[in-house]
Image 1 (cartoon, rainbow, N blue to C red):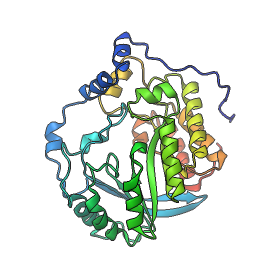
Image 2: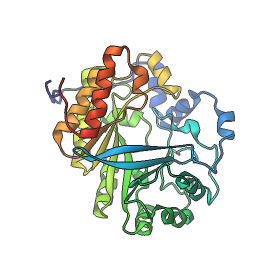
Image 3: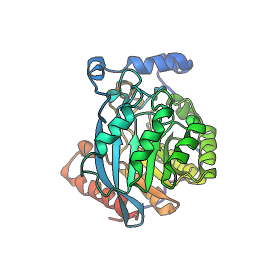
Image 4: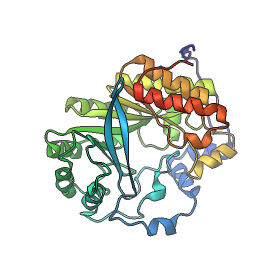
Length: 335
């Protein structure tokens, strides 16, 4: 298969719907619209316990060609992220208010109390927001968290690029010899669409955060969207995904996680109704993955979560299995 074209002749992206044009022109109004599109989950969120994690799973994640490491991922119950990203659905299982001090160490203790994640070498602590958000995870809890990480070689946390700073340094210091990896949402380097995603950041913010992390020897993971909203043309969506991957490698990213953009938060369904969003086609997903793998500049992962639900026919199941095998082997497997 051919490499995606890199002509540089791509559109700047636009909002064709006149009613949305007015909203997107004012960040405060756009933020409000995104939240107004949400389904009412107030009762569900009010009933969420802050003493146990919302979910946990064990997976074998590649760290190189054919090399896998057992990884325990703990989805910590936490408050909603202060940024309301257009495509985000992680707020659905968050607490409507900040969790009390001591809650996060208790949740971690609950997750580690058992043999499900026994012998895991890496630990992901994902909190549906930013680990370094002081309103989400109190700095006073860092010590109680890190003392429970002694059996792991690496701890991976997530953060908004603009929150990389002294709290990051503190966590790294308290982890001691345990490696720290920080996952940040880069999403896309398309300047207009990145603004429309309501992330409150630009590529310069990401690069500055990456520079700081690299300077302290912290590993970097980036989340990249495959076909974000407003990029309705498949070839254009592929090109911008490839450009974003190239930017990530240049910024020093060690692991790039490709996420096929999905609906599920209200705003994305409304954009789909207006013809401004559709999930990526399988060919776009496949070629974006190929671009990352053949570059051989870092580990590239295709997030297969929920992709199986979108399989149109039995004939496409082999492709899903092939993508999973390429994830594992970190090598392109041609048909």
